[in-house]
Length: 338
Image 1 (cartoon, rainbow, N blue to C red):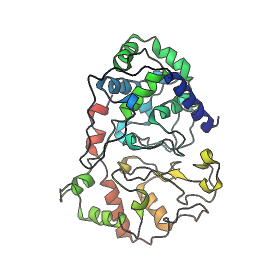
Image 2: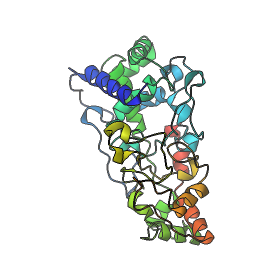
Image 3: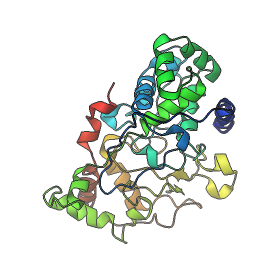
């Protein structure tokens, strides 16, 4: 099944479901996001402002395998907290052992993303939710049948009424899971502590790596910029001469977009191996080596990916810096746990 058409169908379902909805009554128990002082406020849809009840419902759904056709896997199956809400498999398996075709990205700081999936095929976090549910090789379910399954659950119906003033349906499912995912904010790694004034938070070698990372020589920060270490653009990094996964081309059908993939955040990157859209690089050392070589010079390759000729000491420093982006508080936060 072509995922582009799957995503479009999902968007239509959500829009149809939302049509005619009455404006929600005043929110009585807003959820207060715990934002690091150097993070901006994320943009949250007016119709899905965060409340305690919405986040609680979304969290329950996130961890519930009932969302899959045979009730064997949940969102958390491929997005476990211990690995930064990313999978540690090259390619995850869905129900009945069905293989996907991409490495699972982290959900760290998805509240800030302007679009979703590796090729940017969905413009909203709410819309993204139904992608895995309706994908044959993931949850393998029918969205309407899922809504019917959950609408008969007394607890879920009660939570839905509390959160959205309506019975359990697709609107509630997509909004609630998106609400929970927007709370997955990470910004208290040693790097953050260092830039906020703790001069002891980074080791000397990590500081050397930080300076190298932000230098014009490596140009790492050209794409991995800002508080979330991503500009969310689409780039071809010269991983292959011929791409089996055509990336952004799947959406635009423009040959100039072949092999272009959304730039990932580097938050908690030391936890999210293996790397790249297909999980083909097993370690951060392998990632550093790839960029050091300058890629394979694909026609669409970014001009910022070029041979760096790093010494082993410089590679070790970059590795130490990337490891300093691990937020231990984030991966142990009980608010995000089952």
